[in-house]
Length: 171
Image 1: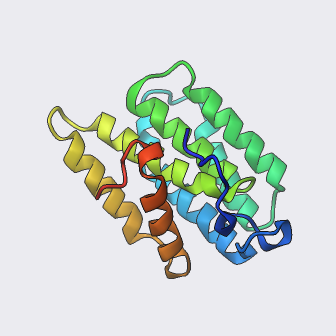
Image 2 (image 1 turned 45 degrees about the horizontal axis):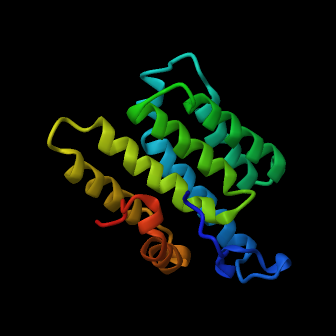
């Protein structure tokens, strides 16, 4: 479970009664897509013929550009997570990261799911004994790419949800 029991209004758009602007929602989706894309090769090396996670990331970006609707992006996210179903380890987590990234169009708080699964994928792919340091580098890589406009929001979200996100944000 990566979503909190009580929704944080900072991740609900203004038109739905929260405080999130459309511009920041799009930035969250782009950042989530970058996090997922950074580990996508871990899926594609295991399942080179399955385009679903790559397509989910593309749909997230297309949603940001206004080229597809929320339902189409969310559906692509579901398909990417379906690609993970029969897998284990890094490939599975990378597919989940892509799925979560596409679902940011529907629920902005999925941004942390994309990041957390990407860190889990990196940890799983690390050589024996290097999982912790690899995960911390992946976490830092993600933080280095946070746009200024959403940086404090995401960092606070990581702090608040770290426990339900497998404590992957201890970097």
